[in-house]
Image 1 (cartoon, rainbow, N blue to C red):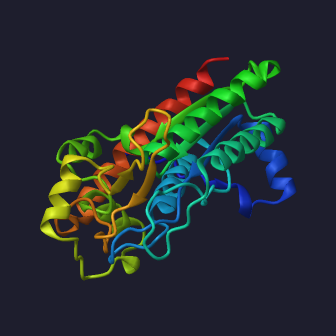
Image 2: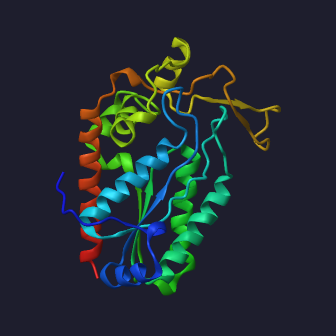
Length: 265
């Protein structure tokens, strides 16, 4: 991972004067999107927020782009203590409004950086991006990118193939780099049968009920009450070295995207 030793432009810490100067030098902004959700007994609830914000900061140091204040409330689907769920429809509206506000500053390259995946939340952010572009034809000069950060890393995607989905060795490795003091030593998981279920399907935490066998009846979806920890992977395999490797791949990929967007006028 290359570094250029620029000072990161973190939006909420800047002044009006500093913002005015920055907007003369860059037309690119990263919008980090995370969630406050269950990450086992060993990781903090804001792990996904850290991932998006810290990667944005490192990309800003190399490119001079802005990093907008993160969207921390979104939809998890989990319900263990500490998890905060916001309706996906509201997430879509919030991201649309944020993109509108960013574009109003004259920013032309907006990167929505997803620190949190999840089926429902990913769809909500995609809907937001689609509607923002469709409802603002006058902003044809604005380029919008939707980037799940893990797709920037070949190593991370290999871990997915290895069925390490959530709060496992990859996310633990990242937090060992960002904030090792927040990673607890004990790393319990749920029961072996639940862990095997998660390996087959990362959405298997859901219990889906249909009270009447009719195509018109809506499904009721809840979290499996047997889940007590909320880990979908093996955090014991984590390491600082792995975390640094994934971070390097993600930042390189993010910087490459920024350069590509900025080159296209």
